[in-house]
Image 1 (cartoon, protein in one colour):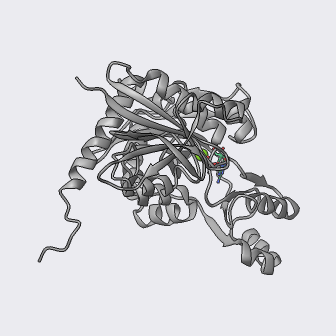
Image 2 (spheres, helix red, strand yellow):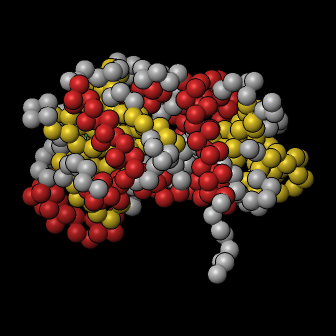
Image 3 (cartoon, protein in one colour):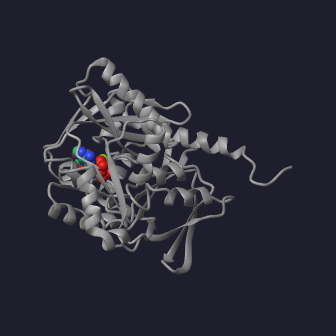
Length: 369
Ligand SMILES: Nc1ncnc2c1ncn2[C@@H]1O[C@H](COP(=O)(O)OP(=O)(O)O)[C@@H](O)[C@H]1O
Ligand SMILES: [Mg+2]
C-alpha cells in the first residue's frame, strides 16, 4: 500500500510555540512508519516556514541549519504541496513536495485560529481538525462564549472590551467590572491559550495590571467572574457524529492552572477518569459534544469545564480546537482511557480529515443554474 504523505506543521508565530514543538514531536513519533511518510514543516516564531533537514531541531535550537529550506505552501489546489526554496524571498527552487494531508499541530494564534486552515483550504489539501470558522470561533473567547450561550450551554458571567476603549474609559470600565463581576475576577486576552496573558485580579490595582498584561497579546480582552470549582475536561473526536471521552480532572499545583502549572511545574495532576458520579460524568460528555457542535468543530476538540459539586453546577469554560497533543497530554490520555490508544487516535484523525475533504469535493464551486 502506498504510504500517505503527511505534512506535520509545528511551532508557529504564537505564545504557544514551545508547546506545539512538544505536541508535534510526540505525534510524529507515534505515527506508524508503515502507513505514513512524514514531512515535518517547522514554523519559526517569526513565521518563516522551514522544511527539509530537521526543522524540529532548527526550531529547538533557534537557528536555521544549512540543510533546512524555506517552505512555501502552493495555493494552487490542483497541485497541493510545498515548494522548498533556498532563500526566503525566492531564489532557486530546491524541490516541490506534494502532500496528501496536513496535520497542523499548532497551538494558539496563526495556527489554531483559522489562518492556517484558510491557507490549507486554498491549497486544496485535506487537513486534520477544525475548519476555518470553528477554529477562529474557538480561538476567540468572546465569540465562543456568545455562541455557547446561544446554544443553551451554561457559561459564567463575563464582560469584554477593546483596547481602544480601555485607553479612553479605563475608570468606567473598571467600575462596570466591579459592579457586574466583582473580585476576584479573571482577565484574559480574547485570542490565546495555554494561560498566556491570563491573570486573576483581586483588587482595582491588580485588575488594571491584569488588563495591561492581557492587552500585550490582543486588542480585545475578556473579564470573567471567578468560578470556584473543579476543572473537568472532556475530549471529543469525530465530525458529523462526534464522540466524547470519559471526563478527566485537572488539579493545578498553582493558585490556578497558569502556564507554569501547565508546562513547567510537574506537580499539577491529571486525574483520569475524573472521580464523578455516573450521571454527572454522562452530563459532561453530553455537554462536551454539544459544545463541539455549537462551534461546528471537526476532528478533535477538548472542552474544559468548571464544576461546583454543591448543587452540581457545570459551566463550560472553553473549547480548544488543537489541544495539547503530547502522549501524556489530557486530550489523548482521555481517549486512551476510553479505549482509543494514541497511535489509533492519530489514524482516526487523519481518516476524518480525508473523509471530510472527499465530502466537500462534491460541492459545486461554480454556478450551475
Ligand atoms: N472564570 C474563572 N474562574 C476560575 N478560574 C479560572 C477562570 N477562568 C480561568 N480560570 C483559570 O485559568 C486557567 C486558564 O484559563 P482559560 O480560560 O482556560 O485560558 P486558556 O485558553 O489560556 O487555557 C483555567 O484553566 C483556570 O485554572
Ligand atoms: Mg484552558
